[in-house]
Length: 320
Image (cartoon, rainbow, N blue to C red; front, side):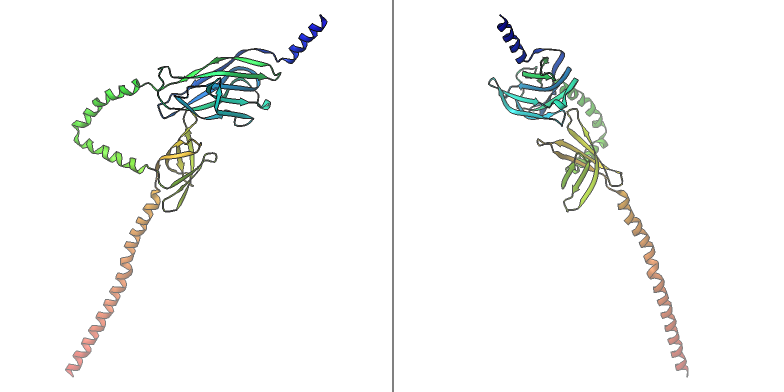
């Protein structure tokens, strides 16, 4: 009997305890996307005790969604991911963090997954992202079992797009009565062509430095303040020149490799430089006439005096 009790105690010591982690929750949220666009799934922990490692496996419908990348919320620490994994025969995305030095507690954003929407989900509620497996461990290597809230990736509602279309005819009726207003759209469309990026743009996102290599090979250096959307993706860059003056703006998007692509450019020309030659030229035009008129008048005057003297001498000789 004593041997049996000792054996049971030994087995309990060898097996890590598994228990519910109180208020620990694993919550998934997703942004909306149209077909051909990307949506971001954010994985967060809520009410977590001190947790030193975790593993999360997400499954999805590969006929509707295609994973693009996984991004750790904390850029430091040991983090591994696999967007081409499988779980029980289903396509899956794995995320693993095993760095005890990067333990977290309370509410914490763990990682994000970017999916491309291949086609519109058959269900109006969206294409589900399911938490198929989890492992959470505290400092004592006790396994934690979180409550899970999954999510779905949806297509934006189309009703919101139809309502403005019904209002536009009423707005278009007023310009029809004013014939001069028909010319204004033409003047507004021309700058749109000028917004196309020219030359090559090099953007250092960390330093905020932007280099524009023009088509003629010359380079312009700018400082840039980058704006991001709710998915932490760059959307616009406000440019300033070397003197800190506004130099325009760039409309940008993020490529699949994480680099920034310029879609449109609106540059402000330095008006002071273009006006100076005009002023200088005006002064030169005002000075140049006096520079040649005075000598010419002097030459003509001297020449006239010489001619008069010659005529006088000639007249005296004829009288003699």
